[in-house]
Length: 208
Image 1 (tube, rainbow, N blue to C red):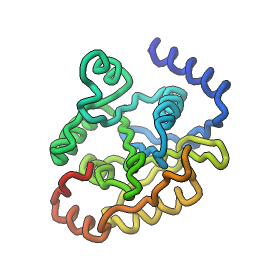
Image 2: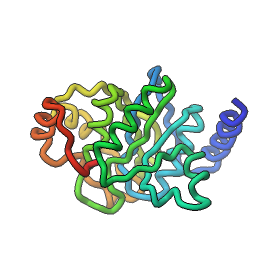
Image 3: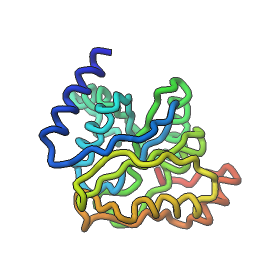
Image 4: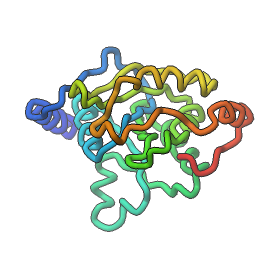
C-alpha cells in the first residue's frame, strides 16, 4: 500500500536521525499477535513504537482511554491505530479486542502493561487478552543503557502465569527503558491466583 510505503520511508529517516538504534525482529511470526511495549517509562515510547512498526510495515493497534479520542484528536488517534476503551469495563475491553483480533490475520495489538509513573508493577490485561484471543506475545523493548529498541522473542503463553512471567522477567531484566528511574519490575498482582482465575474462565476486574 502507498500509505505503508510512505510510513516506511518516514521510519527510515527517523532511525537515521535518531540517537536510538533499531533492533529488527529476527524471525517475525505470521498471523495476529499481541506486542508488549516495555519498560514503559516515557511518552517517547510512543514515537519509538511507531518507528518500529512502520519500519516493519505493521498495522498496529493500541488501547487508549476514550478521552484521548474526543474532538479533532479522534481521527488522528484512530489513524495511528488507537482503539478507545472504557477501562471501567475490563471484561468488555477483552471481548472487544478478541472480536477485533479474529477479523484479520494482520491484527497486532500493542499493550504497555506498565503504568508510566505508577511504580506498582504490571497490569494483567495483556495476559488475559492474549489468552482469550489465543494470541502469541512478542516482547518489545526499550533500553537506554545500549540506546537500542526493537522486538525480541515471541512467546506462546501457557496459562501458568508464574512460569510465563518468569520468562518475561528474565528478558526484561537488563532493559532500562527511556527513564530507568521509572522502571518497574514485570510482576502482576497475585500471579498464582490469576492462574486459577483464568483456569476457571473468570475475569479480573479493572486490570486492563
